[in-house]
Image 1 (cartoon, rainbow, N blue to C red):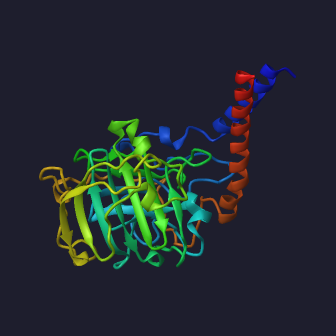
Image 2 (cartoon, rainbow, N blue to C red; image 1 turned 90 degrees about the vertical axis):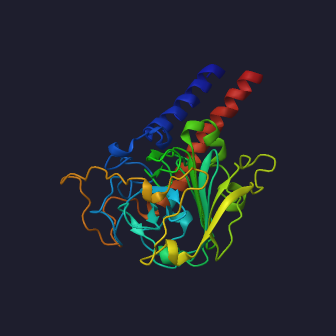
Image 3 (cartoon, helix red, strand yellow; image 1 turned 120 degrees about the vertical axis):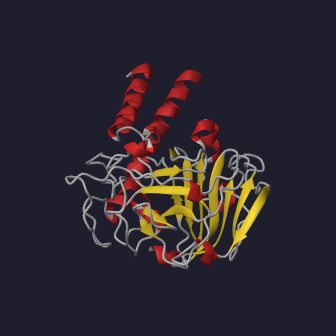
Length: 342
């Protein structure tokens, strides 16, 4: 076989592997009023099917919700990804995570009181992020689990979680999709950063997804402190992996609150978005997505049920798929380089 035919065969194989996964999650763009019931409709693939659904409202909210549309709006209104059921580490089921939010109103599960023990929300010119501390056992994470990363990429490009969406009203006052984001949970700490899609390609650099073992200090440096609840304006960090990328950026206009003021049934304060004039959570209307149709409406699923999601064994089996995918892509790259520079 000639070099050119061999290279073409490898590239064809790599393209076939990629195409078999369907369109990458990162290319799927939605407006708030046009969220589909499920973002990931692929079937028969190594990691199984999307566990939950994306069209969420009052009919899906509660302790059995499998909503996979998350939000990051302000200090008192954000979500992070966590397991639907206890018993597995983040690394085992990162493709099956669901949204847990600080407040009701999004059709998700709501974090039990006391989950968040300290947090800093920051709004920079390029992103919004929350970094903080938590009792991770309250959201079905195993005590002591060092955790892992969720982002809209993954080895098969379907995202972690599969089909997970993130929206924010912090940039414009209306809900827009954050295309690039990353969320690290583990060791009783968390961080979620949503990058402004209007600043592309800078959004991809600031919400980098390749440093999945480096954690929050590397990917989302901040001044967060346990037992402190504050909302600040901030400069943008240097991109993760770049010189000084892990240096916390300067913050300003900080406001500090008591946890009881902003979380739980006794919450009375709606926190203004720092550096955004007088715009606040309470001044931004909460649009309601179209309710699921009767044929697609999620039923009251118990927290232990999985009607459509990948099982942990399917998720663990993704490791071999990932290795094969990366092997094909890597081999194709090596061969192409060899041919070009031979």
